[in-house]
Length: 405
Ligand code: HSE
Image (cartoon, rainbow, N blue to C red):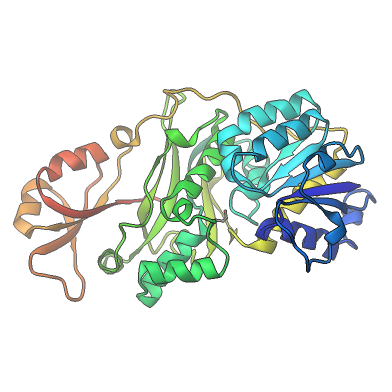
């Protein structure tokens, strides 16, 4: 069966490599069919690549090739990936994608178009890289009401925070190493400002709760305000800082979804997730907490998930997989700041008496070299709006949510 790959970057070249290096086992797992990479679309030149005869810069070479039935879209970005994917689905080709930005923004339209044309649109690699999560969430956990999801969904930021926590490295030095290792997005803003994690939250929330959640509905804060001082205070509370995507089912068919740095205590399964690894903890009413852990970025891990989707399409040419969700709504995702209660870490230029006059229950933290006019503490459980009201005019340096996962 002929397959095309659109985008020959880190993931796309990994897809070609995995298809070729596993050509002995793949046919045994998809009913005897072989997968053959017939075309690779990329605007760049790869003069030294052994697939020179497969490259094209013209999308129509893939669209108009009747023998190509499955296309792996590993381009990233919404355009032109959306336009290409729509055309391919309408032409009766199944498409698999690692493109979380596209799925988060346009998943509903793409899934509907796939359904209308009797083909598949699969995107296991769009969340958690090589970690199986889309199928477990939608199939293995299908009997549960999902109560919440918390995930370390971005490898680059997890790597940076791990370097800060374990090696005392500065944010910028850790980011540079993450870029050298190929974890970061082309523009690292998407990683460090939380946009990449936000897109993955949208996909998980849409799958878990059945309505499209758009990035604009998910309040997102990155890790650029986290300092080694915060890391040190939180270590004294036996915790670590992680960039978490959190989704909570509230009631009356409403959810809260947000991305932010969060204090995770060391007893949590999420606390030991280090370096570029990701983990997604799903809380179901029947199963309890289940945690999916593994490599969340990188060439071969992400390609592993893309190629599995290609194989699924090859096995089910006459059948659609039931991944999908319905239309979203504006008031479906509520403001977490007034609807979700949690403790908070606060660091401020203040003294203890100012803190205790405002908060009835706090746990004070300490660090080496703590200035005499600085305090850090963990509050009781409250909403962010309540926290802001209590802090009033206190000279706050940073606040971080504390998670209950
Ligand atoms: N830049 C992303 C990350 C790649 O660091 O997790 C995988 O989505």
